[in-house]
Length: 423
Ligand SMILES: Cc1cc2nc3c(=O)[nH]c(=O)nc-3n(C[C@H](O)[C@H](O)[C@H](O)COP(=O)(O)OP(=O)(O)OC[C@H]3O[C@@H](n4cnc5c(N)ncnc54)[C@H](O)[C@@H]3O)c2cc1C
Image (spheres, rainbow, N blue to C red):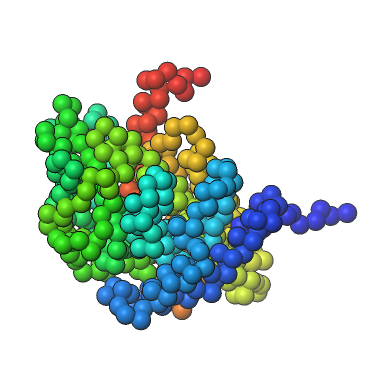
């Protein structure tokens, strides 16, 4: 007797999902299919200004997500961490399957609120609850330079760290922020509250004795006097995700809005960044699965060489590679999610390698899926070219991939010097 077909779930070769997991997956999948996909395609064809304009589907997406209890604010902290990690990975993959740009908009939209809730501080929770969020880290002159956690990672030409164009002065109980973010802040043109992660002067200058900048992570309501915005950015991929500069002209907030400050800053920033890196892999598992499914559908319709494309062995090999890459992305991102949730000491250079690997592989999947569709893959009639552009953007988002991989190498050296990984 021939073996039967293996067990699979919506998300591939999963052991059978629990009832709770399947209910969540189906609810998020329905939202992704009925709301995110169509909205993402429409928004992709609009100008950046139209995306954030009145009546744009962008607003419907956020309204429906809020009403259905989806998005980053939905994190159920009553679940044990291992359950929460798995449920989050399952849900975020579905959002990425629907639309990677909107998945990021929803995720980062709830990020300040999520982190405020993790502090348990009622004032911060209140400040962020129900308000669209963003994460303000990169600046015009401080892109990759903002990702160095250790003084000895400094480039040899630099005499000290790069404090960038957006900084905070902390005096008494106040934080005053001046300067501007980069044009790449996700949700930047429309966010109501931001988590700013910037270099800070606590009264003795911006640098410590090793030349490493001090910093602060602080929640900033973005309706305060002194806050203004740049134009929404036109770009290649993730066009459904509005991005743009935020300017700060002596914006004053109380120090009690800080999530991490002084000696606790780098550790706090590292923990925040780890959460983002793990989420990027989950979104890419969804994007890559969407590209794989699309290619599978196409090769079962298109005939060349007297047969369906799917009947040619070379095409079966190419499908095999794609499926295997999708499985790899899911495995890598789930491991990073689990590690980040359960380890006693997480690290963003570990999640950064997962982000780099998952986004590079997702880009390869989107590219090959497009290739399997021949010239049709290039047209706007099929979603292949959009998936390709969205995956391309992700290789720079949340840190450029070569830089991130280098940081994982640096971490390996630090572990080796600490006596680990020596066989
Ligand atoms: C889709 C998307 C979403 C984003 N969302 C946000 C957001 O929500 N909030 C936010 O703050 N930012 C956001 N960003 C910005 C993102 O974090 C930065 O673009 C990223 O960190 C890279 O910085 P950069 O673009 O300034 O490139 P650079 O740092 O200027 O790098 C340019 C090139 O130089 C290389 N390079 C840089 N430094 C070195 C070095 N020391 N040695 C060798 N090579 C080097 C890099 O590898 C890269 O290839 C987003 C970006 C994208 C594309």
